[in-house]
Image (cartoon, rainbow, N blue to C red; front, side, top):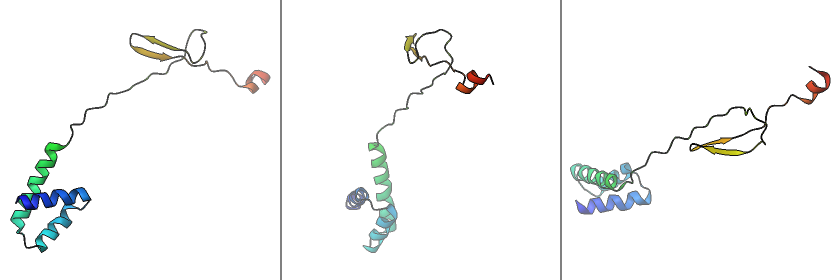
Length: 100
């Protein structure tokens, strides 16, 4: 069975599918039982070698208008939170010119 396991691992790394390897092993006169046992062994070996994925931190942000007259683009860090001050909304040129 170790021969089949190493054959499967080697060819999976090359990009072959499990189905194509199963078919090739059947054509080489290995029994279905041996092939299935070897595939289960390969699956368990590969699962134990897989890296454990860490969860990604959640990033959230809030957008709010600034009440004071400070410069736009200024960054302020308070209590571990970063606030980015943005420009105040100005009325359009045409509204200022014609009063619409």
